[in-house]
Image (cartoon, rainbow, N blue to C red; front, side, top):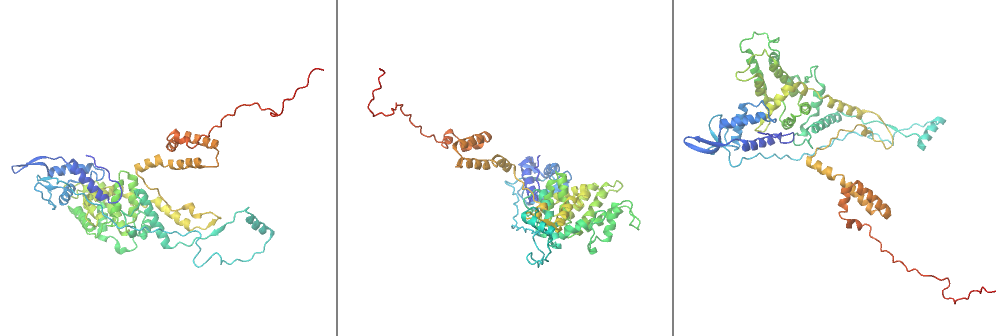
Length: 529
């Protein structure tokens, strides 16, 4: 049973649902069963389905070994409701699936969930102040200049600048950054880092950027205690005192210094139930509804633990400060309870770790709209949070340093020379676009051939080159890039057309040419005396 890893990206919950449905239909064993003196072919019992699907989910890296049998039954109920399966009489549509010997079968086709369509989001381009921007209400032409008395030394300096010996320069004062400018820089660079880690072309499908509050990011970075817990300005949003006392009691069990009343048998269970009831009545999960897709997308990086921790760090910075504080205190309590060997069992039939995950997963992560894999995804995320909460709920130092350096750079007075661009020294981060393996192979094979083909054509059409020089260059090109040359001249005939042979002149007959051919023959002088 192989479950393909579904990586980060938009609609990850829907992709996981479709992947699980397809694998369940393809691999679930079917056989002949008998019920009430009647035989049924190609079916399975409810217990067989629970056994097989439970093992599949536990072995899948998308869900993990923390999946319980109860969660598997809940998923099969949703399979029955969505007509992924039906009972042996063809009934479906209700969540009345039970872990028993009742017979079920697959319909001729199980519907896969379509991917939701969202309206296109117009990305706002953040315009940073430029070095050349003058302060409001001023211009370079109207700056008053006091006349100077020119002595010989100053005249020489002016003359040197005029003839180019010393480059001219001027101080450029950046327009003062407003609080809104700084907030936009924090928001833009934080989202850019998240996009880079997730490897997405855009965050539009996993996050509504308009709902990201830059004030939350800045508050979560700077308003923290020595232990790293967020400090709230509005004390009315704090946890109630009685809840905080109960959490401290279980986190420090059995040393409950805050309690003044005597403890009784089962006291710790009642305290735990009090905490669970408070978090269960929250109107919105701690990770908020609008960040659901972002956190689910990060779950696709759990195989790369370091990258997943970095992505969760940034996502948790986007939370409202009161949510981040409640999450920090809750995760600290859960982790301490799980590691406390002196803690009595808080529930019969469940281990402490499983109980923590099952109790608080829904109040930490859930979707506003019904998502059939809510419970499994929330349990997977909470398990990872419990194991790495100290790292995840810390402020990412690299991101903080990068943004602070960017803001300091934009506020710095610079010396500008003619033709120099100051902002290039520390530009806003930009990231490469991830491409598919097929596109990479195509670019590797053909990306460099197009410029070489253009260079070859330039040599061929150059009228300034003589035939001898052109032949010499083409010979060198053929030796260096035989594939490109072969594509341009596939046959010797095509190559010969470039240098047509000149017609050879016929050789002239050799003739004796006399000096004066038409003069009469002159008798030579006699040698006789």
